[in-house]
Image 1 (spheres, one colour):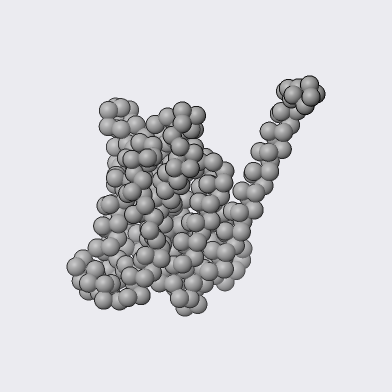
Image 2: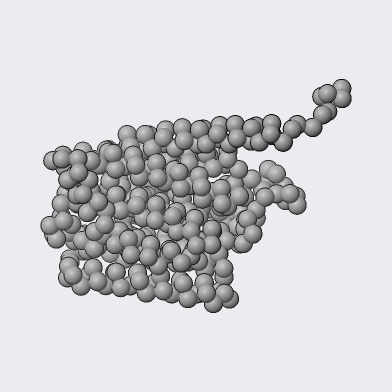
Length: 332
């Protein structure tokens, strides 16, 4: 009996920790690769919309707002040149995008204090929501820039949570050249530190100044462009979407009941996600419902990945484990 109760030597504990850590990382890698593979299979583009979009942007013939989202198009063109193919390697790009999103989600959710099993569940949930919007029957286009937008948000979130906010302004150069929705990235700094820390406010406003310079610089370079589907905007766009049951169905497939659950669980999660939710989600949803087709669920990928999914998972963890003093949560 004494042998059974003997303490485990420090060296053995370290080996066990290393083995456990390697096992967790191996499982995470397998889940990320599987999720990336599944989403890539569903990222079909039978009508060549992705190639047409990239070609139009490179030729300066894109409409508003696509002409001003240049980064993803030039990445696609650069990879085409490197591989020597007649068109960009869209499938490979999608797979890499999803591997990046999955890996960053695992790291970001870890910074939020989520356990490994919850992080893996989150990766699977995000991949499932994406898959419902993609493919031959899905209303979302190939959306290179929207996936890259989510990657930039996750990188920014990791920088902020690790106290490296100074990298946000230079990150905004690439993020804003990719898609104008990255304008919400500096709110991560405010959500982390609130409005009372002067340095945080200064960094956030510098980031917004950089974003404005890139945004107006690109617009000045290319000049005005007519909007695609110009006759459908604002109230006309909303009413058009509401008259199409398929648009409503795909909207709720993309966001599911998760935003509603986030509101229910709001008081149970840490202040960082609370503040980030109110700074981003209502305005993001309002803008996209007002200005775009309702059913294009990939438009909501960034806030769902960054805020809604981890918020719900964190609340579920708390409901299972209780609010004991030993419950691990980041200091926010």
